[in-house]
Length: 248
Image (cartoon, rainbow, N blue to C red):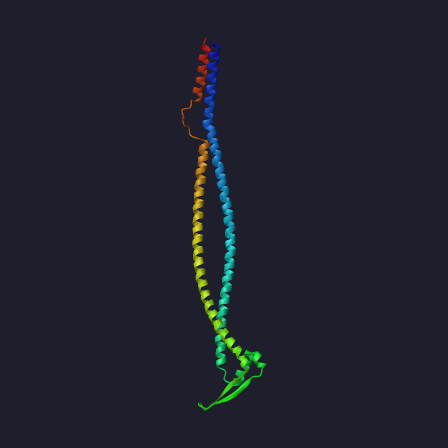
């Protein structure tokens, strides 16, 4: 009987201690782990957000720098385009000036200025009589193989004009591409701003909800999970000890 008495008292005490431990574990242990998990998750998300902000800031700085360079290049492009137009106007004026030369001496001087290599060779002007028109026409006398220069210059002139036309077309297409790129950039920027706004709003809401969640974990509402209260636990232990002491 003594052994039964001692065993009952021991079992009662152990049961009480287990109930106390279980109440502490269920009431505190799991909540603390969840609090730590929620806090750690919040810290990680804040660190991720701060990292994203740093990257975005660097990208914005780089974008501003590139934007400044683009404006400089656009300004230089406009200046060169104006120069091309000026050169074309100058070419037309020079051509008209040549057409307006009336004296053969002036024409010879202009020819010598245009082809200095010819001016150093044996060349001159002669008059050939045209019987049909009954008029004398002046002709330029130059070495036969010097005609290569005129042929090559004429070929170059045709090629340069074709290149000019192609380059003007390329320039026109580039301007259209720039307009489309500006439109794409604007859309991309608007999309990025929308994503950023949505992310900030979602993060703010999550942060608020997570804070309330942690507060709820740290101060949970009173919920009866069927676990004996301290008075009941104490009474049970006392009853077990009393019953055990009555056993003979």
